[in-house]
Length: 187
Image (cartoon, rainbow, N blue to C red):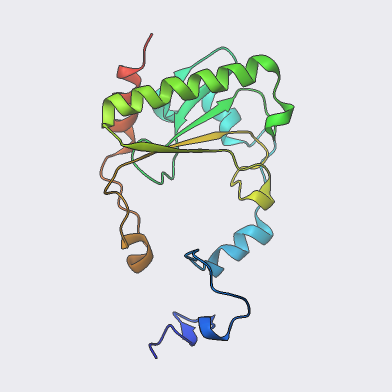
């Protein structure tokens, strides 16, 4: 038995999987008890302190915006899962997709498609994860302002560095990535 099979790992209580109820399934699980404080006490910004409401008021370089539309804009995620991780946000401070009007929905979709084409051209990625976490319970870090994630993926981008070292390697600086995507964005 290793130190992380039962008892404690880095001060966090653990359970041996053989002690858990249920039938084993094909899912891998990454236990992140350190996020519980954030989940339970995470304050959600209002429209006066929301980073997605503030970003369009700043320069594109300061806010990491790569493109602006009439109803929505595209910016780099400040805490990316991968290089080129973009967010598409409506300008209006709304929480969920069903609150978006037809113009916002259409432009979010159009900007998502353009972003995918542009990132693929710039980074030669092999695929994407797209998604919207709706509400805190669904994992939205900023649940009060709708945003769509566009995460580029490469065939060989998965590794154990985040799990073993608690670190995600991002090989490029945000400013460089923002500039490259903005320069390649069709006008």
